Length: 129
Image 1: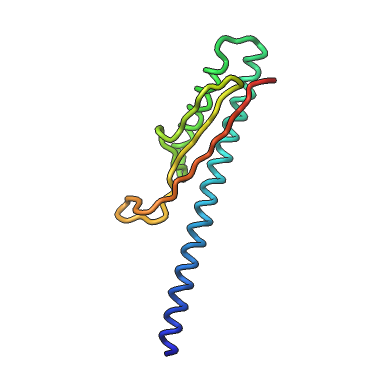
Image 2: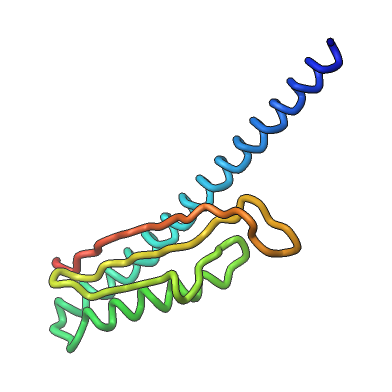
């Protein structure tokens, strides 16, 4: 009876540890990607606001393309799991809307994700001074 209880508690501990590990790394992936989107958007916003102040032609298009190209360039870094299909930058009346979707793999087998968590970040960035 004691061996069965020890085995049961060991399995429960391993399961809870795995869930905690997965939750921690999924949260870290979300926070890292959110920080990346915010950083790239703020850098592009500073340039975009300067273009608006200078009355440059089509500043929103330049702003949107700068944000998209920055995010796609950052997706080549190790640990970043962004894809071209998952990054959407749309022009709005006030600026741009950045939407990023990606999947964080929880369980992989043979190099393929068997179980993954879908995550997304949605930001609206204003170009008004």
